[in-house]
Image 1 (cartoon, rainbow, N blue to C red):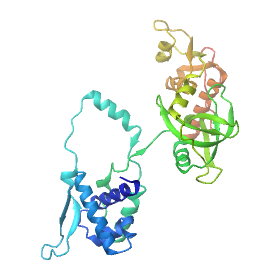
Image 2 (image 1 turned 135 degrees about the horizontal axis):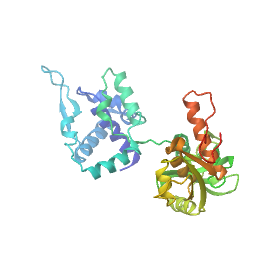
Image 3 (image 1 turned 90 degrees about the vertical axis):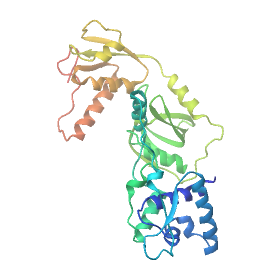
Image 4 (image 1 turned 120 degrees about the horizontal axis):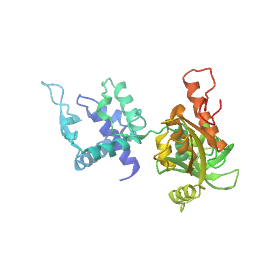
Length: 334
């Protein structure tokens, strides 16, 4: 099935689900963009008949009827909601945990594309739309990285971008100009793979290290994506190449238990520990979870990353005081 035909069927399902009234052929033709483009009534009739059969073959319960109890000469269409809805589903605690993790990635965002156009046209026809009936028809990716949406759009539109990036190894910050090829997920993190114009080479960028806005610096369609590129292999290779480093962390009594376990210090209450790591961002998040009871003493780039996160949190809550990372802990400083 072609993408155009799939979108047309999706539009048709959205239109028929988004109202509790029976929709006439004229209303359906006006609501579904592809039908409005038909050159003649005969072309619309043929297309609509094929689409009805396709929906029924796909198991969509398309039914006919009329809102007028006395005159039923104008037949209408809608989808039987009770037959279309899923039955009650029972899941085990383990399955529920997996679904909970999945829901962090796939969530229903604001309506867009075919759904928005279909609902707008229905409202223009005076048909009251019920948006709650079509939740789940257009899954969207929702992430915590602000850079995800603009970089995904740039990848889709094949347009070069420019952004400020903080490297994972040294913590250095620089402006990067990139021809985006693909965004992919690896080990719980999102990465952009593309051609770095400044270095004239293929590079992998972790989205959580993109700082500030993402700007488009070219025209859509100007990026050529190699046909044989294996982005997941590039990402896995880049992640595996990260060197093992050691961080020195000061801990308050009874604090930072996960950090102590990571350092192999299960049975003592040491004031300082050493933790090996390859992913600086992951270590920063673990230190932040320990709150005021953990202070990074070294290396400097990890410490500065913690301070930067604390300052950002303070600014977001309207604090005018600089965020401290240290205080009275052994080896800590304000």
